[in-house]
Image (cartoon, rainbow, N blue to C red):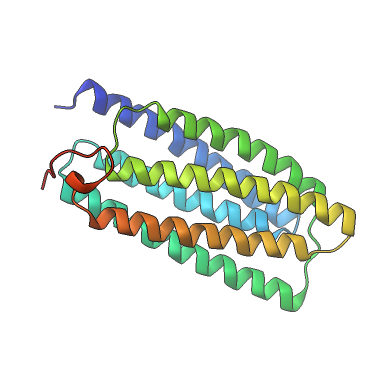
Length: 202
């Protein structure tokens, strides 16, 4: 039987899951229409986030070992996503791209607002298990990436050149690598060694 705290976690994770799935669709369409590597990277990021939030949702109330396995899957997904983004940025660098700065800026502002709301919702949960730490890492990384896309869109408009979009796409991948490594390290620690954690529940 779930506790009130676990029910709160599930409700919050379901909300951020839906929001990230919607962002994936909006950023994916915007990235294709606007020919933007950074937007497509952010769309892929939000798709992987949605899967991670689903895993975190399923992990609520389960044993610590199950939670750490789910967190490891989250970390690996981030690293796979980062490699895919770098490959796409390299392809666009070699074969050319014509990103639309205005589209990048508009969608970056919308995504930043949504990701900030997700981070606020996750911070309200009075728990510090490994999957919630992973979820907070994802939301913070997304918010930082949105700021980069906003700057890149402005530079694309100003310079009439595609390279800011490609650079930010690569930076989004770098942020994902950092987040993925941190999540994998966190998942290796017993809950008793984690920040704010209690005894491991294996």
